[in-house]
Image (cartoon, rainbow, N blue to C red; front, side, top):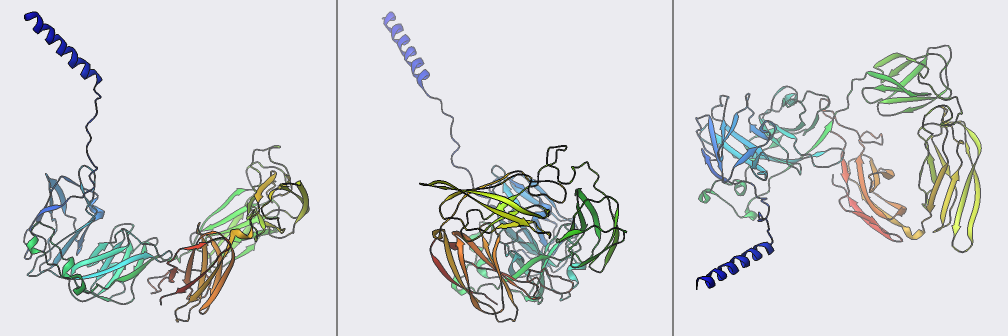
Length: 570
């Protein structure tokens, strides 16, 4: 009997070992990812308390939390001269004031995505805590949205100021009475303020001093004051678990809160100064200035004056000399009637090739680049573009090989000519057969820049589109009756301007032969009639010119006509 029992025991042990060896070990799963932000379990004193006499507020949560950059993300209205101290004890946030609070004043503390859970960093999007040092809590508010003046896109993380005084110099000299920040969609709400009319400003405050005092800070303003309105009871929510204190009115009985629209802009720097003279390659000189160049005048003071081409950019005047400098040339450059500098143009100092010399013969400089546009387009000619002006030349041969399905290759030629003028592009004015592959070739060393560099061989492969690849847009524009002209821009999917029109009154514009694809429409209220968008100036009380975006997607399909109407709001 004992032998039998031992055999049974051995068999049981062997079976257990085999089963264990065949089992697949699987790590336990942690379940779905936590995406829920922390919730508040207790506020001491309660949110909305009156007669606050202490210096400490405690807010408890249902889980451990962290704080993200309280300096930028915690907003207190009215602002305090000293920042409070924020500490975490267990699941409780302790706020200790280091400043003496004003008497009979309502304070609002806004946490902008600052409080996050400890494990997954899920933030509470926005949390308001209000209290009063007096007998009552202010129950009025201002609401609105901040957008970029030039693009109409929402501006997030932007300060919004409110002042009860109607004084224009306030944002330049005085910290705001009330403050908040915009949400990702550009919206803002300044809550728990006193009834009355307020001046409202938005500010991208680079140095965080709550003052508009830097030339590269962006500002938005409203010319008139805005009247604060009562906070609807449906948005005055108790964040604690005491549900009996929540008052919610039917949504249809709560009037909507009026919203102010602010357009953020950066002023044009009116102070002008010369920054530097740049000479990075033979024959090219760049006069770089601090701000926008409105007008300029150059006078050569040297005995010899070199012929040049000129391009005026936003803040840079570029000269391309027709021949390299051999001696110093002195130029007096006056810009915007405020700056006049005497500048010395020196010969190019780096070793360079002789005029007309090919790349790689005695130096390592890159070739003259040649790019092309519109290759394959049916209704637009091919355009060759160069990074700088090229020398005049006649009879430049261009070889074109058309590969036809049944008859083989068909070779043809045309010639280009470069006049003795400022040329940075050449048009190949020729019609190409539809749906036929082409190879366009221009041999090397036929284009020369004034710096002596020549081109490599140009090869452009393309297949010409057909009429079925293009559509038509017919757009009816209904302008506001404000007396201003509008600049209407049709943009492609890359944001490039396809066509621009100056429109003085309501009319219909037809856009034929548009390549199939997505487009957008933008309109600029051109108040000064210069054909471009202009920014504002707060000190002169000039608002930026309004920009309107057509709010429907425009999809052009081949061989289709699309008709739309645009009613622009005043």
